[in-house]
Length: 194
Image (tube, rainbow, N blue to C red; front, side):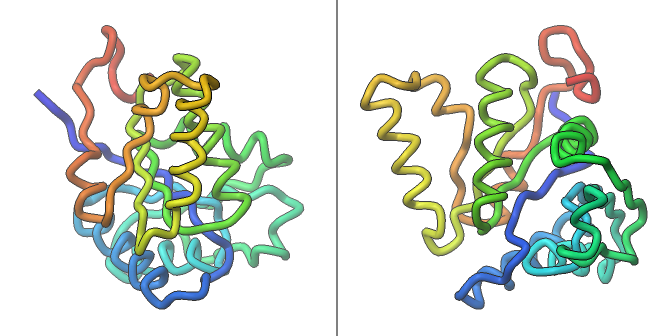
């Protein structure tokens, strides 16, 4: 028996990116999460794609938890309309809270911060710290170079094929939704405990 996740952490850009499809995907992500009654967990900002995802969830009647460090409240323009806003004292605390609140992770187009979050959550999974789904939504091939880098690490002997398989690459939001199911229990633990 499987359980649809109740919350998804979305990692994405604090900028819009160059292609309109990035914004469209962010809007669809928010709308889809709200329609499926899945809480958005995200970085708490109102700028860029992260702001678009949050706005779309809110507009569609969904729940949003934003997590933002104190020093980014101005730089990323803290989102004032989210259901819950958590202000942390560091980036590390932000990521730890996002990790603990989420049942799955979706990666949308983004830059260095998105790459950092992706690699950290993937590394934690490789080290057995969680078994939550990690879905990279490769909109219009935006992440081809990152996927190639991960594949090269396997070919060059720096990562195992099993570790590489911990990150699923999907083409769109509907595919991410379909892959975002987990067993009711994993190694005897409730999903919420992982």
